[in-house]
Length: 400
Ligand SMILES: Nc1ncnc2c1ncn2[C@@H]1O[C@H](COP(=O)(O)OP(=O)(O)OP(=O)(O)O)[C@@H](O)[C@H]1O
Ligand SMILES: [Mg+2]
Image (cartoon, rainbow, N blue to C red; front, side, top):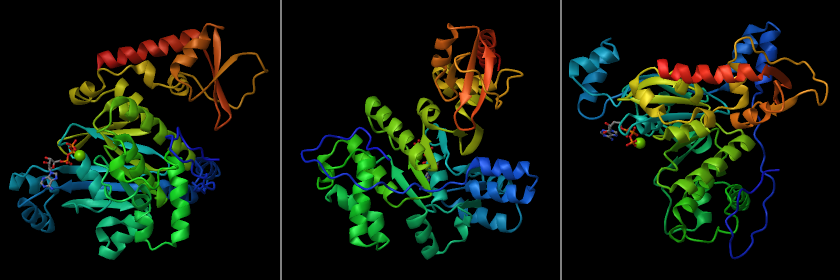
């Protein structure tokens, strides 16, 4: 059952909505099973079905030089050559990435690094100068206006830093906006609005007008409006940057909870590494329109590829970021296996538990078991292996 998350108290209590449908996702285990069975084609199909966004060599130049660069590209010049000849400064410079279903992929970088331009190319608000974007297998650049409208209305939704709500309208009217565009039945619209307002903790607020709400509540409305259309891809461009730190953290937690429950695929932009590390499955760091480094937060902290990335991760507390499973997986020779342990033989922590929990149980014995709830496998490591691994992570960060 989906929970209303920290509902904001309202004068009148709204009736709770029916349980929203959970969307099906292609299980990773199925792809693995197919691969194991030697069915390479089926496994390739399964992993293609997992891919929600593919961006290949995306380039964007704004302003007058763009037309000249397009002509050069048509004559066979590479993007790099064309930009060089025109002495243009690209907002995006040959960026490629691939996003899988169910992940939160974070784009981060300093102001002007091209984050918004990149996500606007994904939803077709900006057309790139070079390269391709496909969403759910549909090449965005090949869509005519009707197909693009359809793609935006049915497959993706966007949440903006500035909320982009209709201030004179009620919460309900704002949330049902996308459903009204899709000409959905009014009764179904009202039902869906009730469901998503409950999900974001705003049940009972549907009759209020936007100008009566705080910033955090406005962004909950923005999130509810995006969730209402049940998008396959949710794009969020600095959604929490205008909010104060406490509200921001609460909304990050709520987004994570919703993502787990609804298995959403989210492309999330931020310039804050702490936020990226908290919510991102993978993070892409951008600078001057280029993709500088991609990896998990742990990868980036442990092995920053240059000073720009190092500056982003400099003040990160590694212990706060890492979970128990990630740490033990990096211990040389460690292995998650299906071995069953006699009940009570070892203290066990969950693989997704914070590192502090792993360290907390080490005082109970020389060994600890880390259990992966999804695969049912566990990994037994010694106290000294855990401390050696922590030591080597810190050393890596210093050396590189
Ligand atoms: N419509 C536009 N016309 C001309 N230049 C633009 C336009 N939009 C973006 N740019 C330029 O492209 C570059 C990348 O801008 P973009 O908005 O993508 O950066 P960003 O990483 O999202 O920055 P911020 O963190 O400030 O939002 C900047 O140099 C910007 O000035
Ligand atoms: Mg931006």
